[in-house]
Image (cartoon, rainbow, N blue to C red; front, side, top):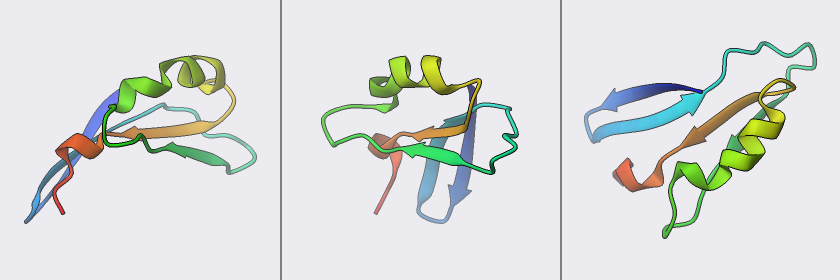
Length: 64
């Protein structure tokens, strides 16, 4: 997974994605609960990374 970020006037949000461009145009976005972080989905990412476009992001750094 590749670490990326988006900067806004409210702060920076970090996310991780793979480089696959699936023929099915399917993307899976993983969103964790407030007591976890993006690493909660490591096993799912390992299994799915060669089949789907994946995005995990870190709620902990998101500002509301």
